Image: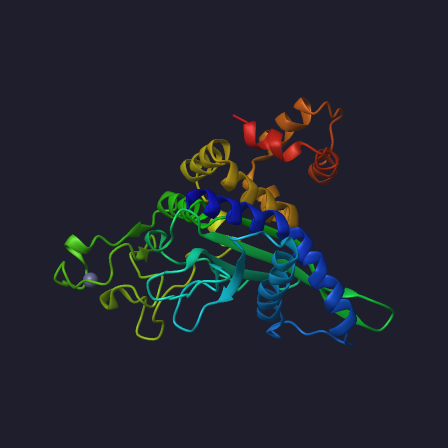
Length: 313
Ligand SMILES: [Zn+2]
């Protein structure tokens, strides 16, 4: 069983770039438009299309006996998709018939700040569950028309990204509710707040957090926790240290960080100190007393610079 799970897991991850290419082809044919607005819901449509296009690829595999497909989760579930056996019953309530789940998120590169949040509590994921992130933008098709193009994608173990997120949340001064001493004074047996994130000011980050910790009468929760970009930001030497340790020690975390940073270069620039960029330049054999922007552009022209950043002490 575990072999089948791992195999399906690896297949879905490996097929994702091809699936994105096929969505792009479809979008260029069918979703071309003049204008192209932000906040249009197009990101949600692209996420849904990932499920449909992934199924086309899985069908083509024609694997004997253990064929799987992507199912769309009904309402009120935190995940978006489940990978299920094609020929068996599926009961989402208790995960019968499914191998793992996939939570899908999308980010528009032109938006000021991504609205997408990965804020589900770590305890709600199993080891094989995946996080999928699609980065897209309106791309010119001809002089007048654009279409939504997925420019990059990440897919990896959701628990690892949740661990990275949680470690940096604590490093920023945040905490998590312990149901044994819930701020709402709940009975430990019935408390629903265990593991809820609180920010450095002690206010709840999610609507489902303790009611006594709402930020103010007008704001019911802070909503910074799990921002796909924001969760990687660090604001102190201690937090930077945690970031570097997790990146160095975990391949999936490293892949996520590299993915966000290659799509948002200014975030990468801010994560590292100027003297760290200079040390890296030296290691890469870049010479001369260069302005930071020129230095960064030369560093980024080296294919392995993110691997080198990972190893920086
Ligand atoms: Zn409680």
